[in-house]
Image (tube, rainbow, N blue to C red; front, side, top):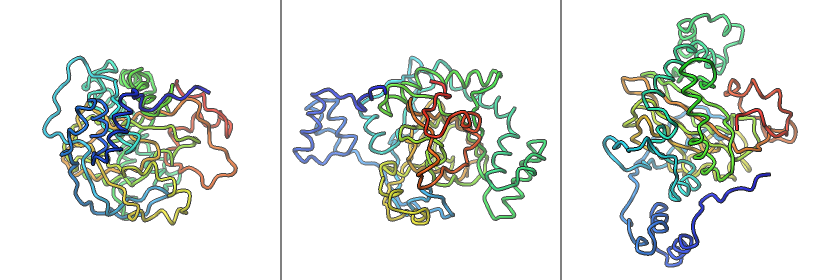
Length: 385
């Protein structure tokens, strides 16, 4: 197997600075420690006053699957402290990562990266137009996927001939069952022969995004697992707490997802992602607890964080096991986002025997085309490298 790359790639001097900070029992935050390493000894005491703004979040109830319930009473904080509109960078963005960003991802399970789209050779407007093009052509498919997830029999799903018919049926199902109308999800938006798909494929299969993914995961190479579009119209409800690997048929820890907003997200009313910080490292949770035992995670104490504000061109990255959610869209505008999910090269399909549980099939459309061609337990080579 390929030799794993060091996750942080720090120099000996940087490592010594970090060790010295701990040895002297300096009360530094995670960000301050890495700042000290990058700045050298002179920066060791800088930035002690930086504190994340924290508040209290109210728990959003609802029945959840394993590893999907919220840490109901945990503090919520913004991992991004800037206010106002992000200044534009010159030179079309950058795909580079600092040691601080890599350590933040390793520790928290999520990180914000600014102005990444330009490094892929497209503009923010081109990317947004491309997704709109694909969504317009495949809107019926998105509604049918939600109908299946909500338990509508396949025969009835197949009867829907237009996006309007499928939308009306979905709204009726939600009303009958007392549910909120969910967001729309469309898989593999980079596939197809349209101009929009070409642009999305250029970003998803770009060296820039692959480099970011491999550096954050600490591996030499990654494969593109899937792309997806997420659309929350005004009034669409919350996204339940979940982890992406829980809906994946792969036996790995080496997965992450980039979430790229295609509309400005200045506040919580615009339905950003929220993250249960550190939950990807909570091995004890699924090891000791049954599905029923994981329905109430309030006692786990995960800090709930977001990365507001977010603008087109930015993205967040989160680990495949990290619990994350999204509040309802209370704004007057649709919230659109593109996701790019990558896995470490060499991952295997889950075996069929000896499992504690099987993956949730909510994302079945995301892997149904290639899964039958990979034997259980075999290395997955069907995904783009």
